[in-house]
Image (tube, rainbow over all chains, first blue to last red; front, side, top):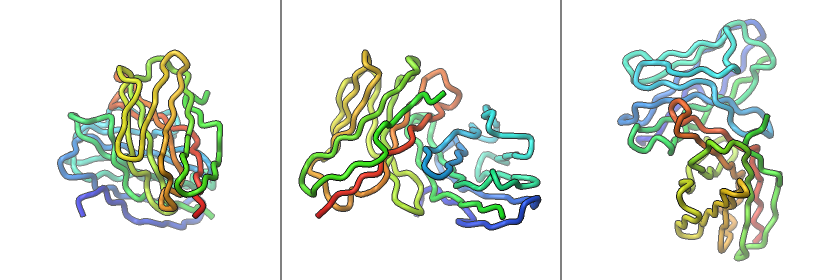
Length: 114
Length: 114
C-alpha cells in the first residue's frame, strides 16, 4: 500500500499528558499537511511542510503544538499538556508540487483526552 | 468566518436517482475546488475537482459544476448507488495560499436507500 499512513489510529490520554502522532506521506510527495477535524465539522488546516521546511502554521496551532518533518520524509505532530479541547481527529495529507491542489489523506489519528 | 459552506447537513436519495450536493464560498481568491468523500473511521478520499477556468468537470458518475458569479458549486452523482452513502466535503484552495492549503465546508451526509 503506497498511500498515506498514520500512527497510532487511536490515542486516549489523560489531561496534561504529552502525545505524539506520526504521518508517513506518499513517497514521491514533497508536501505534507496536518489538519484537525472535530465532530460535525470539516477538516481545518493546522500546518504545512514543503520537504523539511515548515512554511505555514495556522492560528489554531497553539504553542503547545509542534510539528516536525526531519529529512523531508515522515512527520510528527506533538501536543504538550493536552486539554480536553484537543480531542479531535488529526489528519495528515500529502501532495506533490506538480499536482499540489489534490491532497491525499491518511486515515487519521483519533485523540481522546479524558 | 466560514469561507466554505455546505448548507445541507444531510441528504437522502433513492438508489438510481440523482444526488445533488451544494457548496457556497465567499473568498473570491479561491481558484480550485475539490470534493472529498469520507467513510466513518477513514480519512477523506479525493473524488473530483474543478479549476476556476472551467464551469464543468465530469468523471464517470460524478459531475461538478462551478458558477463563479454566484460563488457556488455543486456535485451531481448519477445514478446514486448504496456505496455512495458517506459524508461529502467541499474544499477550496487559492493559488497564493501557502502550499495550496484546503478550506473545507462542514460536510453533507448522503444516504442512498436501496
